[in-house]
Amino acid sequence: MHLRVKYTYLIFIFILIFPVVVSGQQDPVVRKVKFKGNDSFSNKDLMNEISFTHGRWVTRKLLGRETSYYSEDAWDMNVRELKHFYQSQGFMHIKVHEPKVKFSRNRQRAKVTFVISEGDPVIIESVKFTGENPEINKELNDQAETRRSILEARKGERFQDNKIWNDRDRITRFMVEKGYAYAETEPEIRADTTRNNATVIWQLSPGPVSYFGEVTIEGNQRTPTNIVERQLAFNQGELYSRQKLNRSQQQVFQLGTFRVASVRARLSRDLHDTIPVHISITEAPQTSTRVGVGYGREDQFRTFIDFQVLNFTGGARRLNLFAKHSALEPYRFEATLTQPAAFSPNSTLALSPSVRRMKEPGFELFTYGANISLLQRISERVSGSFNIYYDNVNLDTTSVALFEDTDFLAKTYSKSGVATGLFYDSSSPRFDPTRGWMIAFNARANSLVFTGDYPFLKYQIEVKKYQPFFEIATLATKIKAGTVHSVGNNTAIPVEERFFSGGSRSVRGWARQQLGPTDSNGVPVGGKYLFEMSVEPRIKIVGPLSLVAFMDVGNVWQTFDDVEIGDIRFSAGGGIRFATPIGPVGADIARPIWDASSSWQFHINIGHAF
Image 1 (cartoon, rainbow, N blue to C red):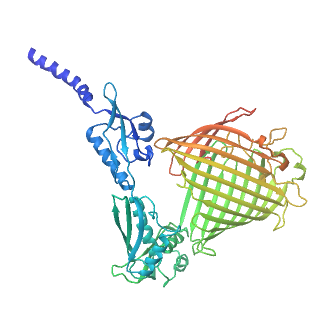
Image 2 (image 1 turned 180 degrees about the vertical axis):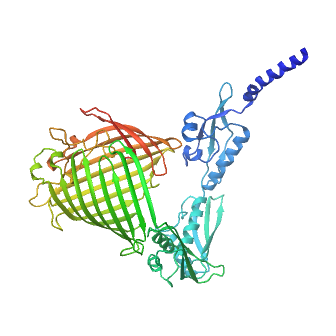
Image 3 (image 1 turned 120 degrees about the vertical axis):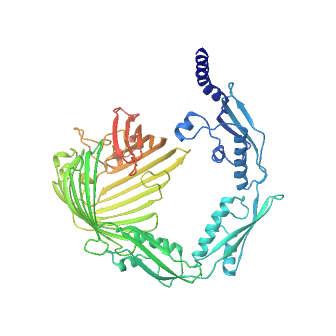
């Protein structure tokens, strides 16, 4: 009995001590990684190529990296990874010296230093093209000697594996665009590691010159075949081009009536010179309804409903019936009839009659009218628009500020004119951009081309830039400027056409429309000149959560003589964002700085401020 109790105690003590013993035998955590001798690559570049990671709390929590442990086997694996990276970048004589490891007193943490001798890189001495087609060989050989070369791995450049494989794709695409649909190419690398140079010889196999053949279309039950055919960027019998094939797929899909549109060339193993094209279509449901509900600090409770009918009265036309309610727009009803491919595959014509009531801090009004717009896609990133509009406005004159132009504003007036715009967008991804540019320019001529009240010219430009930095952040910047001025004997500008500043998507240290001149009752006057600028670092924390810090500056002025740099106002603040499939949802808090006003502003929005 006593012996059994004794063994029970021994087993219990062993269970308690065993995890501690195991823990004590665990390899030390890699706390820090350093590099010496890496003249050609940054520490960040090399960290991306090895398995070791920093064991700091920030690295683990913010970047989601797992803890690394130091051992001889782990060291050897990381050395192999470093050597492979350097050799792929042309450093064939790379050496990684014996490890320099500094352990903590309890040997539970380690600081690891890689000491590197890079050696001289291999330089490309010449690039040559050879194959069965002398014309293609000559054209590429001539181009390789010019600055217009399509190559990344050029004569005099450091040899890099990734550039060679990129060039293989570039050369193949070059031949395909010449009509060689079955083109293939392979590199032959002749490297001299003693002289540290290399010759790149491209073996070209263009195959036969090919042409577009018969086009077959399936799946278009409601959309007429001839409308789909008009969206193609090629004709039967034309020289084959993969670029035209891809553009055709894009143009077919942008008709807006399909859920899926696939345009594929039917290449043959027999290398036929006539290539048939097959278009497979899955049409979207003829009717659909979207409903949205949300809340914003400025528009408060908001909701909308959008009912859509595809192939309206036949063809590829679309009809949208839209209704919206918010504190800023108590009601808005709009019907839009859209005709895609109106004058060309990339043009869209739309007619939009609407009725709405607006309730802004600086004015309240009721308006009805119609807009005819033409949207033209100029290139993948550039589009333009042209609009003809008419609006009849019923202004609540008791809602506007009391200032010198008040007497010139009628209770009821009409606006008609033309507007045009140019838009450039290279930003990505769509709803939460982390890189690229967005540039928009708009101009409006009111009551100049057509008769109406209050003739004026209005211009506005907005530039946004998104730049990633480090691994977890994006620097977003915005500049916005605008001017509106009357023409002829007219001196007044309709209040809804003036510029206002302040709010969740403007200078966030002020409430909506509260930055700029106001009357004695604090009602915003608006201005004829606008300038705003914002800088906003966006930092990912963990998962969908991120933080932003920002500084916004700007103001509006009533006349050009009033414009002074000293009048530009500043605000700063921060916010939180939560990523969703339709863009980030977040809240901001901001206040004026270097200003007599010191009140905080709180904003809730869907999407970034810009």
